[in-house]
Amino acid sequence: MQRSVRLKSFELFARDINDVDVALLHALSISVRWPHRPKDWDLLRRAGHGIVAVDGIGRVFGSAMWFPHGNDFATIGLVITTPRTQAQGGGRWLMDQVLERCGDRNLALNSTHVAYPLYVSLGFTSEAIVYMRQGEAPQALSSMPALDGDLGDLPNDTLSEITALDARAFGTDRARLLALLAEDASIATLSRGGEIVGYSMCREFGRGFVIGPTVARNDQDAVHLTAAHLKKLQGRFVRVDTRERDGVFAEFLQQSGLGIAETVTTMSKGRRFLNRDSNEPWVYGLAGHALS
Ligand SMILES: CC(C)(COP(=O)(O)OP(=O)(O)OC[C@H]1O[C@@H](n2cnc3c(N)ncnc32)[C@H](O)[C@@H]1OP(=O)(O)O)[C@@H](O)C(=O)NCCC(=O)NCCS
Image (tube, rainbow, N blue to C red; front, side):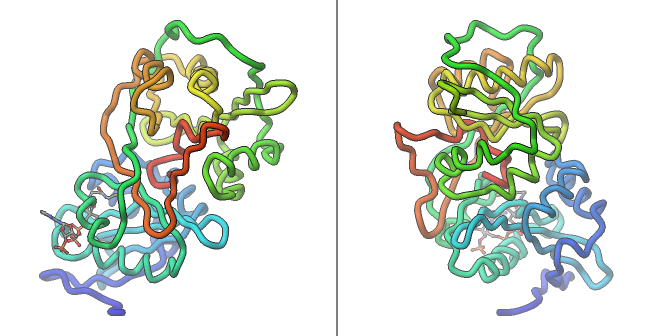
C-alpha cells in the first residue's frame, strides 16, 4: 500500500489523529461546516482510532476515524477532506488506509450524499436512511401517548444495567463507548415490572445537545425517553439522528420542532448491520453520525 499520495501541489502523509492539535481538527470540521467542537473531537479520539492527512509542515487536510466494537465490527466516521483538496483522490486514499487498518472487521457507516459514490465503489451497500433532525426544544411538548412503565434517571456509574439491553438493539456490545458517552451525559430509563426496557442518553454536542443513543421497545417508549430530556432543554438547540421515517416517534419529533435538516445513508460492508426484530429493543436515536 502506498504511504503517501500527491494531490496536484500537495503531498500528504497519514499520521495518527492523536498526534495533532485538536484545534487543527476543529478547523478541518469547520471547513466542511460540521458542528463539532474541540471537546467533541476529544471524545471521538478517546472513543476510537483515526488518521489525518498532513502535508510536510504539519497542516491537516483530511481525517478518517474508525470505532471498533468487539472483535469483528467497527463503525467508520469523520471522513473529511478540506474543500481545497477535494476531488483529487484524498478521500479514497484515506478510506483505503482505514480499510487496511480495520482488516476483516464487518463495517458500518453513515454516508453523506457527496461521499456515497466513494463508499459504493469500496463495496459498501445501503441499509437505511438516517434523518438528522434538529431545532429548538419547545417550551411545552405536544400530546404524548400513554406512559407504560416508570421513568427514572440512571446514575452514570451503574451502566451495567443497560449494556446488555443496548447490545441486543445495536447488534454488538459497545459498553466501552457507552461508558465514555455517559461521562458527560444524563441518562433516562424506562422500567416495567422492575426491569429496564429502554434508555436514552443526552449530552452536549456541537451547537447544543444530542439526544441519543435512545434504545426502546416501541415508538411510545422512545417518545417518553426522548421527552424526558426535551422537557429540561426548553429553548436549547437539540439534535436527534433517527432511522424512523414515520410513525409515532417521528411525528413526535416533528411536532416538537425537530425538523429534518439532512439525511444520510447507513451503509455496511461484510455482515448486515441493521437487523430489526419486533421482539427485541431497537435503536431509535443514534449515538451520533460517526458512531451510528
Ligand atoms: C466525502 C469526501 C471525504 C470525499 O473526499 P474527496 O477527497 O473529494 O474524495 P476523492 O477525490 O478521493 O473522490 C472519491 C470519489 O468521490 C467522487 N467524487 C469526488 N469528487 C467529486 C466531484 N466533484 N464530482 C463527482 N464525483 C466526485 C468520485 O466518485 C470519486 O471517485 P473516483 O476516485 O472514482 O474518481 C469529501 O467530499 C468531504 O470531506 N466532504 C464533506 C464531508 C463529508 O461529507 N464526509 C463524508 C462523511 S460520511
